Each structure stands twice: as structure tokens, then as C-alpha cells.
Image (cartoon, rainbow, N blue to C red):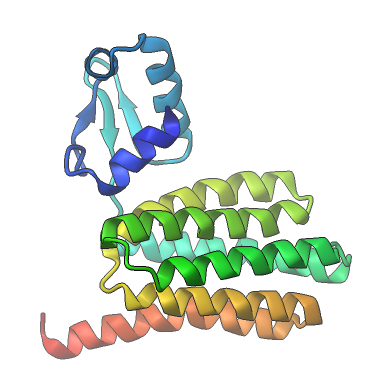
Length: 215
């Protein structure tokens, strides 16, 4: 049920930012009891995608450019700790690397597919989430994983909101290969620089372009 609602938030125009999802109405619409709807909304609230407001329902949250900047800052800091644990403690096995390569190939396949844009973004973001959670879970840092999981879900929502072109998906897919190679080589400096460029420099370039255009 939570997966269904996440998908609705990602691609449906039915629940734009600021609208309310009402437990009773949704249960009636789907012809199910209120219990699974209630549990799904609690899960989405825990992931920072909705906020429960008494007597009104669960309000759908959106993400401003400043919110996305802050989320990326948090992600960068936590992933840096994950990478350090993986490399210094040698936590990745050959099977782990094979799994990451498989997910990378899945990302490439989706990015180059002929799917409609919305479907492509949904499929890509699902695999991207699986890739990064897989890496985080190998670190054995439960609180870091818990926080990163919420950040990943929020950035997944923001990806749909701010994606400018499908070409960005191909670029993002290739960045995953850099992560795999650097982890296998134990190159923490390359991991930090790669992720810093990915997260910060691309956003800075976009901001500079917008400011230069006077929009």
C-alpha cells in the first residue's frame, strides 16, 4: 500500500504539493479497509513525504530548491561515512560488487529505454534507491542507514519534481559506475570528489545558468 501511494505521489497529478490524502476517502475509493491506508500513510510520514494534520488528513509535502540542496548536503555527509566504513573495514565482497554491477546495468537499460518519461523516471529512481540502499546496508551502520533511507525517498520525490531532461538519467547512471570502481579500488578521495561534483557542482552550474539568464 505504501508503494502504491509513493507511486501516486511521484507521477499522479491527483496529489500535488499541499493537497490532503484523507484516510477514509482513499479507503472507500480503493474499496479496502482503513487499516492498510493508515499504516501506509504512517510509513510515508516517517519518510518525510506527507505530514499528518489532525482533522484534515495527511498533507503532501513538496521540496523547494533549498530543501533539495540541504537534503543533498545530508546525503553527501552520510554517504562519506558509509564509504569510509566500507573501504577501511573491507566490507564489500565479490558478490556485493557483482550485485552493484547488475544494478548499474539495469540503470543503463532504463535510461536508454523507450519508456514514457514518467515511467522511465519511476523505474530509474526505484533502481537508484535499491543501489544506494544496498551500499549503505553493507556498512552495518543502522542509524546512518535509517536516516539515509528517508533522505533517499525524499530525493526520489524531488527527482521527479525537478528533472529537466531524460538525458540527466544517462549521466546519473554513469556516475554509479564511478562509485563501483572507486569502492573496488578503495579510493576514498575519488569517491569524495566524484560525489561532491555530482551533488554540488552540477547544481551550482544550473543555478549559475538561471542567474545568468535573468529568470
